[in-house]
Amino acid sequence: MKNMAKIVLIAADCTSKANYLATVALPDFYMQDFTIQAITVDNFKAARHLLEQAGYTVLDKNGGTDIIFGDTGQLASIFTLLRHHGVQAEISDIADTLYQA
Image 1 (cartoon, rainbow, N blue to C red):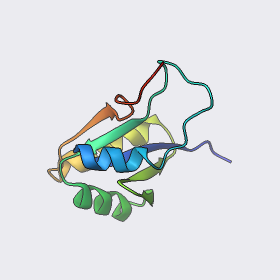
Image 2: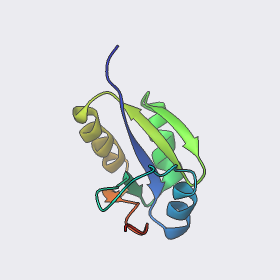
Image 3: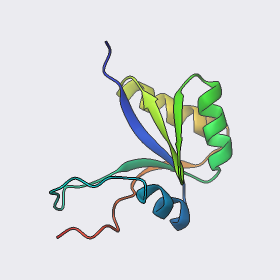
């Protein structure tokens, strides 16, 4: 079976980020290295629709969507698809506001 990866798709706003983070189980022990990488977009509905139509597996969660993909080349393809259709997208750490003691 091929290894699969995931990345979060989320609207570029604080409310979506907070709602998504509320669904995440934190590890028992974590320090400054805890991160959740996401693709933040200016038009979440359009981005989600484009990815689903392109055949990506999208799993809806409160505040965002997990995108399942096969390899890092597909990650570049996701950005190309979104930008080709006018969706502004960037990679961001959405766990940057969690307390990390």
